Image 1: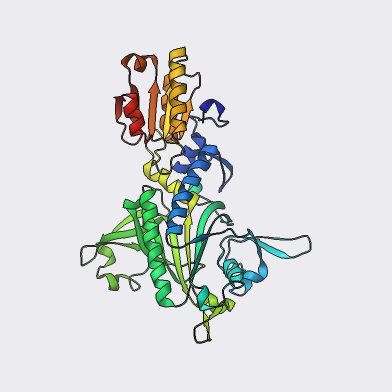
Image 2: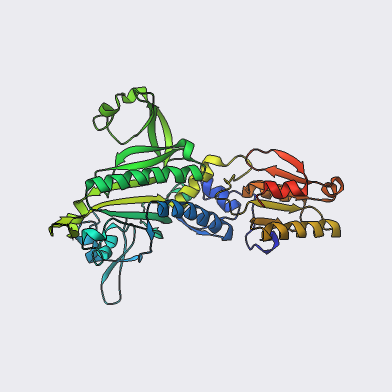
Length: 419
């Protein structure tokens, strides 16, 4: 990928109508385009980040027997009436419309009922269970006030998974496996050290749920952190009352430290509640009808992208972890003399042939502008090729996260960059 061929451009101007740091930086760096409040388009660079996050999530969901599919965004009214969640008094964030024949439709804000309706056509025997399905899809939610940039929007990409199990024991085993998978995801995304599983309200889903909260000054939530009587770190969601958890933890809330946090995932244990509402049953070994045990598991993909920005960015711009960065290397060519151009082209071709993703800054602009863009874009490694580096027979490599700069040989360059 060459900078001269990108249609997006970086800008020093901070968007006047954007107060969220994540959106400011992503717009300045050309990763997203703001359509309206709470609605953002993702450019080629932004899409690469989204797809890298999705791939990490996909790998961990597949590892716990998830099967990927995709549901429709258009939803029938009847699908949601059985559980009462078509009612605006129960779920007040629906976008709704009518087909030309007058049929009521909604635009998917979640997919529990829709998944159940589909799976009922395929699952009828104990031999068909367990089944766990997930999707990546754009959700639409009529938020009264979109805020926090891409961390809370009206349109966003989400991974939602749904589990179907024979009984409470089988369900609990999968539920715990999902918690472990989620923590592996956050570790791989570079935010695991500050991410905690918390007990929380279930909102429009269930009475209670588990939320994954990342300590973040820009977050909309708060959690209480501390140590239990065994010295283990505990995290309690602010909205949960003392009578609901701390008796269990042996710690009073006033002994815990309150910190700002951002929700990066949530999971819900429905038990057989939704199955009973929708008559979702299977036949057991004795030929008896039983209700399926259900769970729902969400990660906001674009929301997590925003949290990564808020957590890791510095005063120069974005700082992407290697696992999610749009490319691994920012190759800055300084000057356009034949020797510099030929070497830069050659290094770009070699890295690309070895499957190392590179953004090659081949523009005819000042070195300072290229360096500023490299920092703003947050690419993990900046490699400089110039007449000066050619004279020394070395390559200047700077790590974005640490700021450490090295002069290394071509062989060492290829070794360090994983080629």
